[in-house]
Length: 634
Image 1: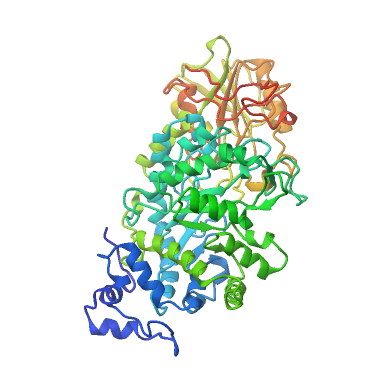
Image 2: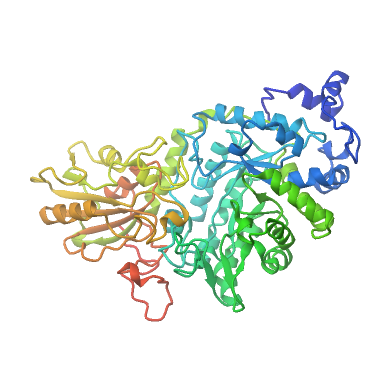
């Protein structure tokens, strides 16, 4: 892989190869007065020799590091926290930076790369020239980058049920992420959603652990055959373990009814439902695992996953053989105890290797050093953690090519990539009702389109798209469902649109009402939190009732989970679950007009009423509106 070393390429190459005395002179400028082990930077050090096995390089580098440098490597800070204090990256040896949510900080891959390369320069000014890793939540495309290809959220890919297609979406995400200088995506979410009131349901591939585990192919898509390639990013299986099984109302935080709550299961059930998919990811070689905010109660009271040494060390590391980075979630260790020293030592001893601090990184580093000095955290535990972090940095090729390769920037949002996103959107559509074979439409009809999801890119993108919670307006480029209908329908079709169905329907042959949830993420989307309650909005309900009373009627549901349709289906002739289809609304229109068949099946059970949750196949008295795995074909 070639790399445009647009900043200090000659210096870096000279240091690694010991090719030029002038380059070495530059490298030796920033050296602490008392650097400790290894004295000064040694360009002939074994850890800089790419021909050696990674394990040897790690051991050599660890032997040269001070305890302060090791603590820095275990620190992940949010990019906003180091803005204006960028020398801290060098002086503290911070191991990783991350984006806050999916915030769109820059408009182009080149601008993103320039920002991250600037941080990388600071890291390479440190004594041992250890590069940093930059991570973000590219969970369904690099949706932090305007113009990027955005795929259906995981719930839609679970409906498509095609592990190979899911892998292809991840491979494209990796290309559009690494080209912006980002090395690490906090994806895939291998949570098993057992209660659709959970605001993260759309991040799950479904309610069945076998279905979820089959989608661990996305790890191969992200990481590729060579993690150091300009087309690969480090993947993260999350959240270990049990976050999809939290009991309704189990959280002690008033605003969060499910998220960050307690999963109350026997160990056997926890393993069968929530740990099993991680085994598939580990077998695929996933490089990192993120720990869950939630707690597990296996019968002896709830234990925070971030404090659970049995699950993180005995099970994940020991029994399952995971040898990558164990990463905390955002400020999650703070929830272990109000005593920060206790929170730090408990989480590190439990098995956390890198802490997503994310703001007060100095406090974390100082506290960790205090705990090591006091003998509460062993240096062996620190070495194990740092060794895992360095192993992935070597695998990413950052010691050889630390700066971004933006030569593939023209691939971002390319027609080729968007074609795969359109294919994925079409494959994720689930046909739930089709009276008198109304669908597919011929494309020659007069079509009256209504509903809040028809012409709202932000609603079909969902959360984690341009911002943590997403936006109704949407910041990414794409095609709305209305635009897709106009594109796919035949030249003889007449398309009219009225979002609230206030315009006369007239002699329309068919009405298409696209109802939608507003975007949300995490606990903000828990049913009962804020305005998110898994029911149709008053405006959408009125549009369904009005349009379906006047014409043959198709209702398309754009949502991150099932919504309550009770009382609105009497006159509905065709019903489609579109999930959160991403940037390519034409993928929703393709099966609507028969360009592609309807092949999707329900990845979760669809309740008659919200209060029927939790509802999962195999439950006693199982009586959903539509069963798990249901889907009509065309």
